[in-house]
Image (spheres, rainbow, N blue to C red):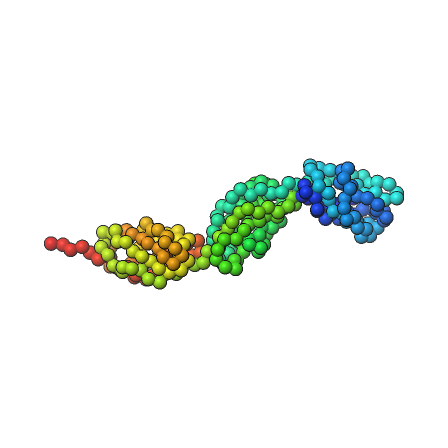
Length: 248
């Protein structure tokens, strides 16, 4: 007498289908010693029922006027616990794969990002990988995981728009570096790096539209300024010019 699914939440509420023979006029379905709810006679060979709450492994039995069946095992699974996301932000377009860690993840069937679901790859009971779906707008969304034991929430993932650069001020400074530069644009609040001619520069985020940076030492001439965040990079071609110091 197969039962599908053969596992469900400790809180109950799992709809199971029981298949066998001589199931007509089923009067009761029990999970261990607890009666199931919403028992429905589908056919002489099939019955559906909703599991009660429980723990561990129990035997499921069906009772008809002809007697009670042999027990078939059903396993109660606790709700998942999520401890962390390997990556907490990424491009608005999605498509990047992240790792989620926790416990009770071995039966995970879906991961939701702000209500948009994705199918995970289960690595172990404590780890799964999932490709992030596209987001609707930039900003944080809740992340939930659904397993045979239920759904758990509590983590946040932030969708990030690609950066743009509007202005770089001032546009020149000494080749020795040390010039304080203001960069304006969009989606700058998630900036990971700023480079001048390929050399990383120290920077501070002022807000989503403004960065401040200090030029590193460089070589005389114009260089590109590049701002990078989890969604990509923006390049301002020849936006800053290194000027050689005077010589006597």
